[in-house]
Amino acid sequence: MDLSDDEVLYDKKSKGKASKRKNNEESGPSKKRTKDRKTEDNSDDDDDDFNLTQQADFDVQTREADIGIIERISMKNFMCHSRLDVRLGPHVNFVVGRNGSGKSAIVTALVVGLGGKASVTSRGTTIKSFIKNGKQTAELEIHLRNRGADAYKPTEYGNTIIVERKFTKDGGSGYKIKSKDGKIISSKREDLNCILDQFNIQVDNPVSILNQDTSRHFLNSKSPHDKYKFFLKATQLEQMKADYQTADQHREVTKEVIEKKEQLLSENHKNAI
Image (cartoon, rainbow, N blue to C red; front, side, top):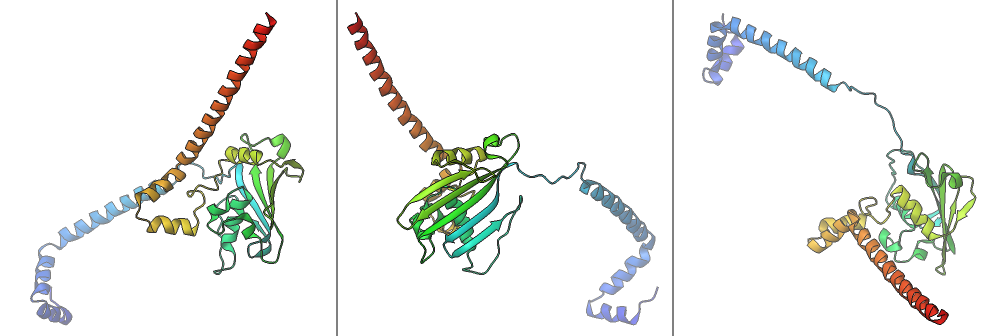
């Protein structure tokens, strides 16, 4: 086997590497071909195994949640929007737009519309600060899916619960909780809280809704106290602590009522004798 001119030049530049390659090729071409053949066979087997492992052994189906899906967010005179109606799909939704176009206002409307405090949004200190300049009132309307076995009072609300919140420049604020047909079922904040608990919606949980200021503060903060505070909110331990304190207060009030009733019962018993 003779080397070509190109291989001879390569041999001179690489100090004999081409000659070594020549000797190796002359000494065992059959072994190399056999090895390559085995490698190709093994490669084919690996490809077959790979293809088998990539095939799903179950039927892939598109599933949707029955409750808690945000189907629609409507805003009127809210922040920079005179009127905006956002319809959302049952899966992941992306809201895109230029800076200052009002993307964050949609998330803020969701938080405020479902009873969140203004401070949670990091966009204002009071609810009235969200009213568009030059307007006296603002309205928010949020549609929540209410289907399936875990639906909240389906006979009253139907397949959709509509939460409407209206607030004014003078600080007034009120709720209307409607059925799918628009019938007002309740106007109590307590009923809204029950609905959110049923759907496991937590507008003040940073894991559920993480705004820019909160994420920036968390990433830049070096204080263990701040990180632990974030942990308490994310794991709902902070909410559990508040619920425990509320339950303890109710227990104390109930205890006082029972003591007064027992005392009154004892006095009535003595008077009867």
